[in-house]
Every structure is written in C-alpha cells, then in structure tokens.
Length: 402
Image (cartoon, rainbow, N blue to C red; front, side):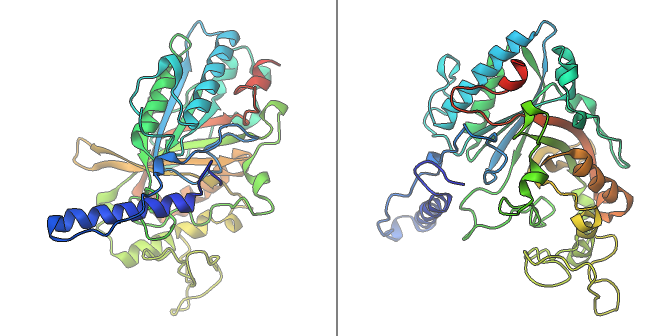
C-alpha cells in the first residue's frame, strides 16, 4: 500500500533510526557523544487515501492502535438524518486522513500528531435496515450468526446498528478521530459499546514481521494476499448493487485464559497451535510461510501436525476452501474480579460471505480445536462494510438514495 509522500518501508526505517539514537543517549547520558543522525522521517506523516473503490482499513497494513465502537440509531432517526450524518462522517474522515483539522468539531487532542496512517471504516448491522424502513434492502448475508459451543456472548457489548473501526499508528490520533465521529452523531445515534486494541508498532522489529498475539504466537501468517487470484472473491461482496466493493465483517472479542495457557510448556503450546512459537513455522517443517503439510508424519509415525491442532482445523483445506482476511488486535483491560487478566484478541475478519467464511471455520474449531479450551468468545457482531467513496460522494450513498 502506498502512502502519500512516503513508503511504509521508509517510514519504518526512519522511525527505527530515531529510536536507536534516543536509546543510546538515554543509556549513556553525557558520557558518550551520539553521532549526528539525519532527521528521521516522522511516522505520523504517513497518510492513507480515504477515497477509493474500497474503504480504507481493510487492505492497508495493520496499524499499531485501533478504536472500535458500535452505535445504535436514536428513536427519532430518519433516513434523511442518517444521510446528513454519513455526509459529515465522510468529510471528517477524509480531512483527518490528510492530517487536517476536523472542522468545528475539532477538540485538538491530536493537534500536532499528523495523520499517522489513520483509517476510518464504517459497517451496518442488520437492525439498521429495519429502523430506517430498508428491510427489503438488507442482504441475506447479514442473518444472525449461529451460537457456537463455548460462547459466552454479552449482548450489551455486541451487535449495533452502526460499526466504526478507527485505526492509526498513534493512540491519540485514533482516539481523537473516534471522539469527533461520536460527537457528530449526537441526536442521530448513541454509543452502544466501545473497545480499544493494539498491535506491534511499525519499526519495533529490525525488519517487518508478522505480529504476535498475547499467547506469544505468530498470528496472521495464512491471511489471503491481494496478489492471490481469488482474493477479491474471498473478501469483497459482489451484491446487492449498493454493496458491490464492500465486505462483511465478523467481530469477536475473545478473552484468552492466559494464566492457564502460560502454565503449559512451549512444546505443548506448539502442538496445540500447530506452529513453532519461535518463528511461526508449521510443525510439518519449513519456515513461517511454508504451506502446512497436513499429511506429513512425525518421527513417531503420527501426524506432524496433531489432529486437534488449531492450524489443521482452521485451514481452508479442512473447511471447503473457506477463508477470511483477518485483522486482529490485542486488548488488555486490567484484571477480572478473580484476578485473572481481562485480555485477549479483538478478532476482525473481512469476507465476501460469512456463511462461507467465518461460520464453517468456527464450527470446525468448536468441534475439536484444543485451543478453544483456552479461549472465551465474549462479544460478537456482524456488519455489512460499505463500499469505498468516490470523490464527491459519501458513505452509504448508493443505499440511502435508492
């Protein structure tokens, strides 16, 4: 993905050089003279184009921070008031993506930070269509997700008429953008729930690497790639007409039972996941990106990748080719009443049809994946992610003006 004025690689490299120089100065103080360094490219200067065939926040490299929120339409909301809201949100998201002020709603929280790869992504829940008299336009793919074993869904932190994903490489930039969007919704929609997540910061590793989750596992290796010939068919919706170029998003808040997980040996953890913890390579051999060989036998004559390993049961080959574009962020919200960490994964998965993406994979995992005994699905949502916005248009225009 290209960023206006800079490449992601240049930004990451520049940021790393600046951090290294700062660390040296802090460690040795006045005893060592730090060699002069070229002024690093500021990470906050990176921009992601708002307009295009698809909304930003789907194909772009995952940012360091995310703010998620669902809103419900106010009792008096009309199609006209929602049109006005979506016009405001479109203008605001476009300005903030350029690092420009948000207009009269500017609260100056991130005044001097720059856009920091900001993206704003909007989705619609199933109830949105009923509330605005658009039931006939609601796509069948928004049918409620089935209940799965081990689910412990809190409906107060699930669903919602509107869904916002706000990503950025700076926490203040992400918070600021979401706060402005919430303020602009006053009178038309109210916040139902809100969550914050994080990922590895660009430049934190010597070279770009797949991120890790809070279990310490490399997470995201088998994501579909835009260069795959069937990528668009797996990720983007083709209909109805107003959604062409959009997608369907499954959201799950998944708490990890870290106290139990961390008691296991590394070898046991690897056999549960099916990958080496050190580098993410499959237990069938090779490197992180080597395809998993589900037929390979281990030294004991049994499967190299155990029958109940996560990667085996989640593999497209085990689920009729089902695949999703995952964009998960970790979360850590302190401790629960029993002292256990309230931490885990904010799972986000974009797909062309949940019935052929998330649902079959989750059913497979719930039937035999040992990893599920260390997870609790505590919140859930399914949303139709609107197509991108052409210059001069606004989010949801094709639906609301039909």
